[in-house]
Length: 301
Image 1: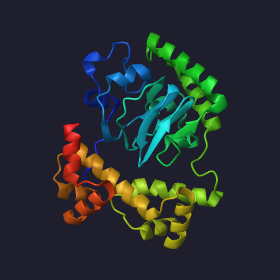
Image 2 (image 1 turned 30 degrees about the vertical axis):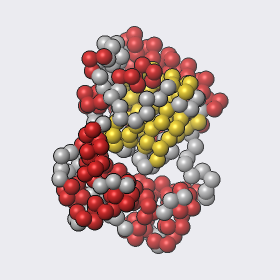
Image 3 (image 1 turned 135 degrees about the horizontal axis):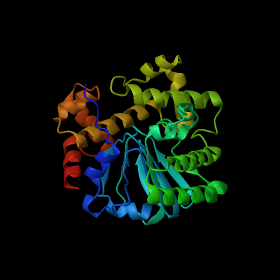
Image 4 (image 1 turned 180 degrees about the vertical axis):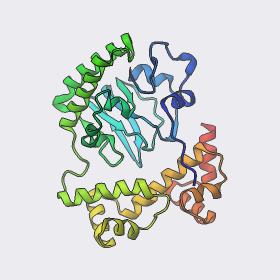
């Protein structure tokens, strides 16, 4: 089974950005490892809409004025002043709005977090960088500190690129620490055992979606009954496990329809559906259009 294409930072630039208009000091050498820009300067250079895609790097967006709208996974988020959002590496995302806003966009590879001191253990404590975490963070009292750090990071990056990581990296780690202080898990209002099971279900979903399509399969992996899993996921997210599975299948199909020229039956097979007719009916039921109509819409845009 083929894997869905995941864009590197360089690949995203080549596919979605107006390369001839990118200022030479915006994306410095080694920008595939780390870069930071102002949102209002970056957005006009992107060829919208960006259809469902994945990236090998993490993206962080902080809004100081206005708003930004982005779809991450199957959920659409709108972030406003003093709020931020993360798109974890490997997560499906898309956006289409020419938003009016100001702020900062920071893109970074996990290697930049680890740094020369080998701080790999830090990643385990940053849930917002995982696919199953809550990507949306209200900064509130931390906003002035975050804005100050971002301003300093931008100044350092524009002046030296990655030639002075001994100074840039500590600021970056301070940024993640400030955000982690105010980060709230997505399901904080529920008992911890419900939250744990929900997070584990979503993690398994991203891992096995192309082969496991039944609630009972995930219940078995989690050592609970299907009824219990349905009860917990519905209570914490408002959406049933079967709806989570269906939505994730549609996301995987959309990325394949956009990124490949596979015939429809192969797209269906790639996500574990062997009956093309069933796949087409399933896709239309959840999106309101056939797989071919979706592909043509993307091509026109």
